[in-house]
Length: 600
Image (cartoon, rainbow, N blue to C red; front, top):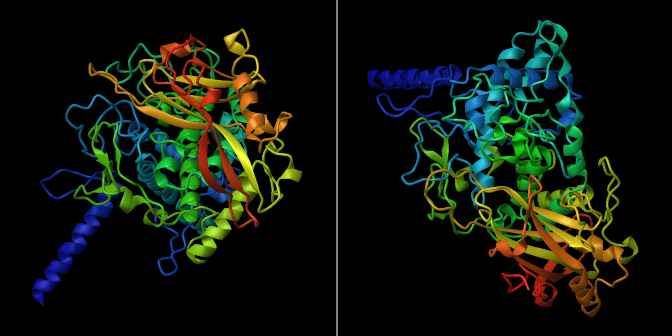
């Protein structure tokens, strides 16, 4: 009996120590051994018996909920004010993604690494790695919200405690609403604080670095961000301020809804949906577009090693995770297949990624055991879900049908089932609706691209596709009516003397809108092939506008293909895509075309 009592007392004391240490921002571990911080997510508001969990909400909805919104704003501001030397400060958590390239959670650099930052890009680990990353941020944010809720007067304390228990980080649905939420670009916002209604500095506008000028060993002086005390969005020059109008222009004109729809309904296997490392329309590719649209040529979001410092990063990536969760619901039996890893700060280059590959630096206990794709793939693990994925109250079959209906309502660019859009712009119809008969079969046309991410020695660049004349002034290329779409290439951080590896990016651009607008019958191969052969062109351009000749990029490969598509009969179904037919004759006479690496 005494032994049992003492054992129970020891376990209770150790558990209490862990709880106090976490609350006090002290990583814990085995006494005398390495110290690790367990990532659990925010588990308040979870009903263990039913499995119900609070929703991560659309920011446009969250800001209408005064108690939840007020707590969120104050919690985010508190997190940003935490001393940058703290492991759980906004600065260090954002720094996990890229700079300042320092060890976090005692998870060290692997030998021979020339790639910096823990983040996984161009990797099949992309989606699963970011899930515990977001959970860590949410866990810290929720801790601040709990503390703040306890400061409200007794008359409203229960309201704010309930709001804190159910608070989760919001998402920005850029596919339905392709502009930045207006609220995030205001210098001040009005919220209800424990001492009354106040106008406060807006923590969603920017992050202000506490230590400035920068230590050049962490933030080099030869970058466009060297003189930026705070984060910026699409500034016109390296020295100017944010220009939200520019970012919103690119967001509104980048066919985001169309690309989101393609990724959700066309990519049935996990690898093609998750990463640009394999062919097909991927969520990672759309994610890249948002980074580029918001960051522009000189904003922090356009550089992977700086992007997580901008508060919009967290809204953006929460939406990426939401779309991932929706895709999981409609593809419950699809999982990762092994794929070569390009390498990160803590994952060996050329290793083979599987569902059991560790996702450093995120540990799930104090002994340093690291999450894997297998252990982090379910949102239940981290205590949240999304409004579209209420998985505890329905069978997997019902969930699949209901999420499919949501995808049809929100993202079908043809609006076959008459979704009432919340988009700021009219829904772009790709086809004449009279031709879209539920259950019928149509032919769709697309461009496929392959190119090395390091084709321009680590510089970001875009490949732009034109159907018609290419403007003589390259400055007009992105805005030209003849531009059918662009693919943004964002190489991961690389330093050191090791040669840059050829990491191939894959992406697809739909030609449905262009073919539908022309006088050509999209179902007639004999009609469409000569049309596209005569009109399709592409150009390569750095984000600063510099033009790069196509024949200077031997890795570039552009093809055109068609697919037969069976349209859904009901809103609870999604289109079914058949095999692809490549039409090499459309592009093989041009530099970068099918089978060509040099110009004529």
